[in-house]
Length: 169
Image (tube, rainbow, N blue to C red; front, side):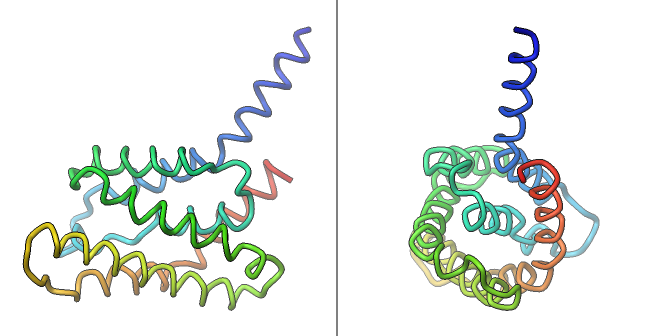
């Protein structure tokens, strides 16, 4: 009986790894660093984690969870409620529909795919904020945000891959 309980607890903790890694990425992205302009162009760590987990283990990351993560991000970052959820759900839908394409591809192809997703998600975010403010906003911060995500993509992906192999394989 006790072995069954501990096994189920262990399996539940392993199944929460994608959710937990996205929450950790969210908290890392929100932590203020003493760099000029960093708060405007923080790396899209949440998007990188979402990209990785939807491609490799979509069974552990359902749309309702992705929506809840977006709401949580908006609540703790002070963003308008629903903005993050919108672009995360759109990204989730896009990746689920294209998952077969990405499976088994080279890392370079995944990186290119992430670049398209990052710039697309940033464009959606920019568009929503422009519509909310009723005027065109400067696009440079969103472009830098996406470019920074593309530039650092290999490091978080490597760490997520190590976690995936260690705990979910």
